[in-house]
Length: 222
Image (cartoon, rainbow, N blue to C red):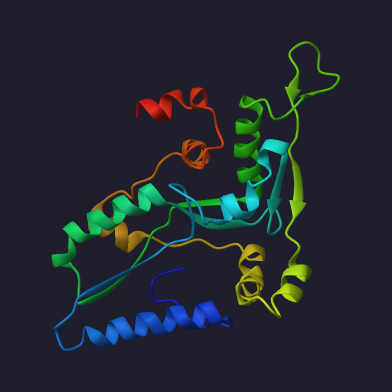
């Protein structure tokens, strides 16, 4: 997805997003306001309130993850410390931008299976997975159980809880491979700030209080 791609939202949240951008753009036309829109994928890291803690990894200590779509579909994710650094870098270069600018933060475009692999490594290190049977003394890594998001239930509950209705409207994103094109951002600030995916996942879980501090020596030192 490039910055100029047509926006044709079918859901409530998408229409609100489009309206917000249009209002910002209109407010810059008389020269009294400057605005930069930085679009990014699903947030994770530095706290609660994301798909990671509310759905995906909420049962990780019990050897289970919940995934909202097919494991083979790649979607964009924004590690918040990297996105925050990007905001700072863009602000430092804002004199080079038009009064209204739109940029894309690519972040990590990863599949559900890549998430499961990263979380499996963490769960193994934490002792949340038993060694697989029949692999000798070394023992192979046991598998995480992957459960699916109960979308039909969300739709039903959404009849009385607007938040769940809004979530159900976004199901298509988990079925549609997509990524954000960040060429314009990189032309402005250089390489996009990017923490290695596995390190970002581990630090995010640590921030949530799910990991013992001993599991993150490299990240903690950094």
